[in-house]
Amino acid sequence: MKIISTPIQGVYLVETTPFQDERGIFYRAFCDRELDSLLQGETIRQVNVSRSEAVGTIRGLHFQYPPHAEIKLIRCLRGRVWDVVVDLRQGSPTFLKWYQVDLSGDNHYMVVVPKGCAHGFQVLEAGSELLYLHTAYYEPKSEGGIHYRDPKLNIPWLLEVTDISPRDASHPLLSEDFQGIAL
Image 1 (cartoon, one colour):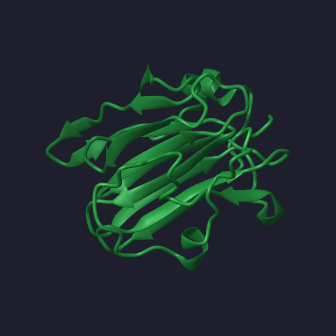
Image 2: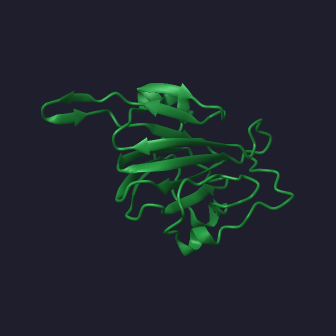
């Protein structure tokens, strides 16, 4: 596993090199020893999978407030998505900046989303499937979201939105006085 820094502190891209032979491929999807510095002593508490059928679907932008804030490690197992991480951390030098990376079943990348950052993606290939590793349990009372078309973020989604959940479509815009998430 090769850990690559991004322009947003705490957001990392993890490159995984698969072993390939006539049978197919094998790669390590997670190793707490190799990723220990990124997990900051936290343990993976929950693993989720999402599958999105329609190209253009958006999921997000999601996060959890403290005390249930979490680090997320996200990998695309099948298909291809345009993955976005938004820095919402109070006092961060990259506050309200976002980072984008294509995740696919072919490139085997994994993105690390630190506490205090929102995450979302747009489906670029039908039937895209993502694997999420979380350092905190899902807590409905701590969940937060930002509207995917928030003008303060100005994220240029690649495709017309074909599907979005009612919950994600109703996430609020950032208020004028939003100071960020205090961790």
